[in-house]
Image (cartoon, rainbow, N blue to C red; front, side, top):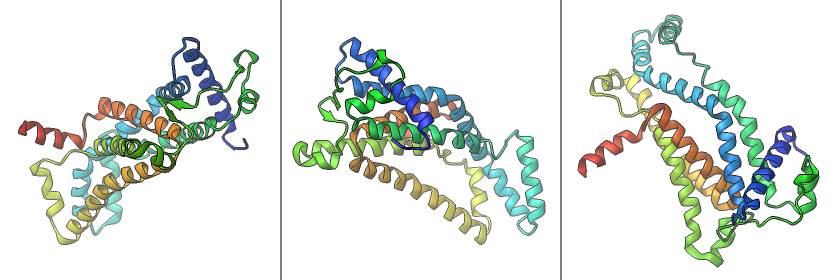
Length: 273
């Protein structure tokens, strides 16, 4: 398997096999599926500090949006002053606009390496797996079961539709729903009444804010739909990884910044009940 990320992929495969051997030792069924979940959680735990830094920086930037809107309106004809005042605002509130970028850059190779591992591991034969393992004691004597609760991890839901019927649609639907929940939580809840005036001041500014709001809102729906579509055509093993990754992300998002954009819905429907 030729890949520039092999320096990450090979250690991950070895860790995956170790987790698999642990579950297999205790005769836990569908050990490979549980190993994929275990490896995904382990990676998320390793990345937890970086992800928390990114989420906290994003939250601070969102909280400063009303103040930045004021500055844009006040200094709309003076770009130099606007830049200076914006940087002053960041400094006063202890915000580094680049703080949310570095963690993402560091995480991406790890995430892509994990993706490559899970894309290939369910397709490898016994020899291919054993050739990657570091120690003879880890060598597998028989190929692992590549099903999880009866679902073949190497197969796509689209290929299984003719045999399993509409029930297989639950995989892309749940994948899209989990992604939507996380995307919604990442958006700041609706501003208070006194803050809404910033978006309604003058025609040019109002159009700019309306476009930004519409783009953000559309992305919140389009991205989960895309992920759901991808999971329809990708192996089930990848969906298992992605859903575990997303659910962990939802929990972390909640711990860092609460419900975020979901708070509006919780308050609205909570009052009805």
